[in-house]
Amino acid sequence: MNATNRTEDVEQTAEVDTNLAAVSEVEAGIRDFVRNDIAYLRRPVASPETAPVEANTDATVNNVNSLIQRVAGTSLAEIEKLIGELESLRDLLHAEGQRVQREISGYAQLSQAAMKSTRMIADNVSQWKRAADGLRNS
Image 1 (spheres, rainbow, N blue to C red):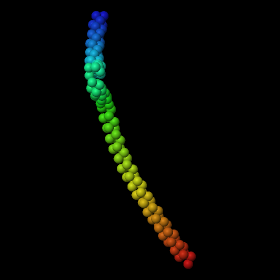
Image 2: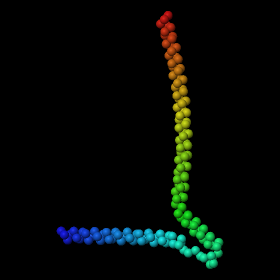
Image 3: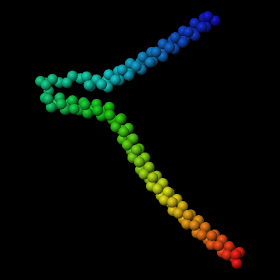
Image 4: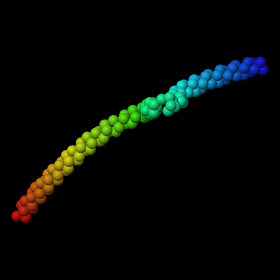
């Protein structure tokens, strides 16, 4: 029984060691990727004596532009996507607002027609009632 427990402990320890090694390998890969990705930022800029000032400025501008495009590219795409969605929602809300206004106008006209009909019916009923009262009194 004791030997079985030790064997299981050894297997679990080996499995944990394997997992730790895999995690360490992935972390090292990520570190290397990041280092390679930003290595061009660490390149020394040529001294003014060895390169014209305009070349340094152009290189710096190109590096900055490249960095901005890489960093902001995904964000700008997401923002543009959101703007498109918001514009389509605005159009939908505008169309729905117009539809609701038409519906309300239709209900208002129907309500006025119902009120006129009710008045006409009430007037006719009151005339019939007066006529019936007149016949009873005579």
